[in-house]
Length: 170
Image (cartoon, rainbow, N blue to C red; front, side, top):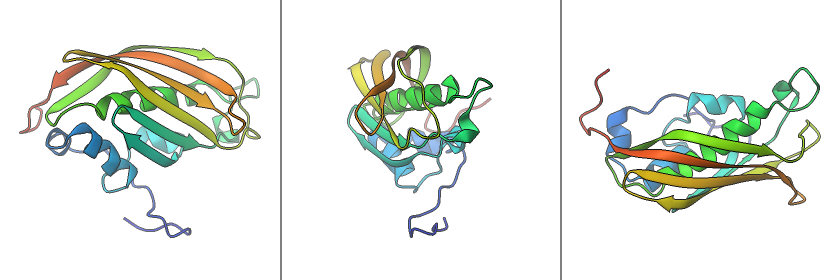
């Protein structure tokens, strides 16, 4: 992967082969994406995250909303927040999973508290696992601005399932 102008490795976007994901504990998998040792999911191109961290059960993502995220009424589209919140919650769940295990979002609920604009500056999205069971995990996430004000928050329920280490057939 190439370096960008700051000397940091430039993001590469793509889908990690299922056998690679299945062979790694969830925390190692998420950290490898954040360290750019594995490609970032293509959806993240739309939010251009940076300074992402992962600990067991907690993921933090920083991003900057811009004009490209606006809706027709002149503010940042709710989908921008949804991508960040769903990603932070899901990846937080992934950090708790052993190798050979994955998750999928069953449902999530978002509450928008304050609008965002291109003047909002850097925002922080933190996802935190509430409960990680064998079959179901729950998590919450919050987006705050640089002053610590709550912009949006969400909760999710995820289905936890085993992954074939030899790859999935479709």
